[in-house]
Picture (cartoon, rainbow, N blue to C red):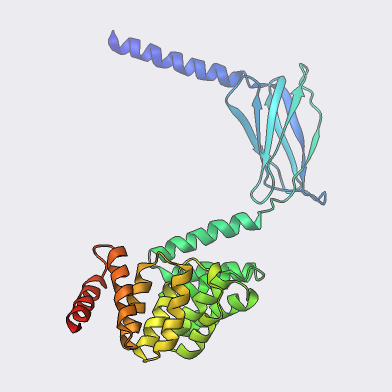
Amino acid sequence: MKKLQQTAILLLFILVAVSATAQTRGQGRIAGKTVDEAGQPLADVQIKATLAGQDQAVEGKSNNKGEFALNGVASGQWAVEFSKDGFETQKGNLTVAEDGRAPNVTVKMPKHVVDPAVELNAKAQEGMTLMQNQKFAEARAIFEGLLAKYPDVYQLNAYIAQAYAGENNLDKAVEYMKIASDKDPTNAEMRLVLADLMMEKGDKAPAIEMMKGIDLTKIKNPLPLINASISLINDKKTDEALDLLNKVAAQFPNEAETYYYRGRAYIAAEKYPEAKADLEKFVAMAKPDARELPDAKKILDQIKDAK
């Protein structure tokens, strides 16, 4: 008995489904032609028609002449959608009369135009994510592809440079960053990155000269300048190091590392009161886990003992 009831329920569902399908069928016909913007026939356009109040669609496709026909449809108001990859989807409504008649329609489908900014932003973000995951070669391939497609977007050279830097190919990194920087010589951030790459490559003198000419009010991260000053201290060019660090301290007064390295430069110049003042300032500002903190405290103790 239970099995019979289940069968009856199943038959009911089947009957309901057949009934819903039957409501979309009749003696009518929806037909016409799909063309491109030039009026040429457009084949393989997917046509989907849905009768008002129904969920199930009647579907078809245009032939090589762009012609289509959905036969045996019910009378009523139909929502019709035309879609094809690479073209703008078109939608409209038409009425199939009680006698099955409906006007033939010609549907013009413009090509789908991709907004370059949308593609650029999406692909650039994909490349940046790859670089964050240290997949530098894959990231570079994305940026190179974008540059080939959009050669006027010179900023892509900077992304390629960063990818090369991640691969430790500093020659190529400098080459591409220079292209980007030369296209926008007033961009201080880009000039600073170029100078930093040149420093890393070993071209210290021209890199430092470039840094000296950068407007510090237009940069956000002074770390490359601090690194350059360290190189100058190691090369015993104390005056140049102090000049650079003075500029950094003036523009970035809350950058604790500046005072540590300026203190070291003052030590090298045998200007101990100035060194003491800077190192004390660093100790007061530095985070507890700052790697320079033990050395700063040690130097301060030595200065104190020297007295």
